Image 1 (spheres, rainbow, N blue to C red):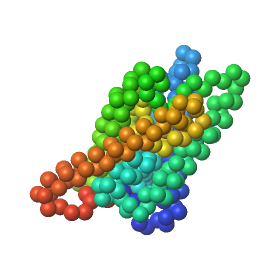
Image 2: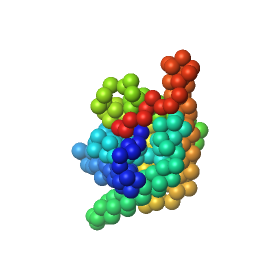
Image 3: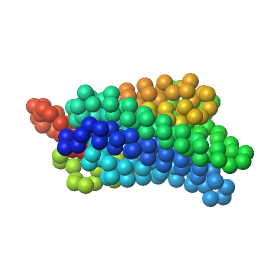
Length: 249
């Protein structure tokens, strides 16, 4: 899921921009538009916004970097043999920087009116900080399971045997569905960069609980990668080697 005909700095820049767009567009929809009086987009609108950021980012930037925009995705792809692990650190740094810049810009915009009330600032949480009051175990399970499914979908949609030119649409719709399921539980992470980018500017509890939104997505991504590798090997009669998902988004 990386292109070798672009330089490393070009790939890092694409990951920075893509993660910036995901965080700014998805979290921005939650902070600025979700609860707007009488016209708010609500959970469904926020879920769609996250899906649209990935869909548009994937088609625009995927040909350059692979369109990961998510440290858990990069780690999962490396575990699946679809991404060069020597690029992991640089990709994760670029993703984090993109998300942090997005979170900071969103904070400046959101506080630009008199009496601004940021609330949770689209941060993730569990227990009393879960939108629906779900406990740590529920938050852990849903983040692991949904990230694992996300990786299976990404690997399947970008495989050599997948329908051509539909990967971005498939992955964007999958992320939309993920948000529709889990916004009430954790406000949906499945992406450590997205969580970090707004946690730095949100309420203090977001930093205290941020560990979960690194651990669970990464564990889920690795599980998803291993599941897909098992499926691929079975499909190849147990003798397959190499990646079936080496094309970029």
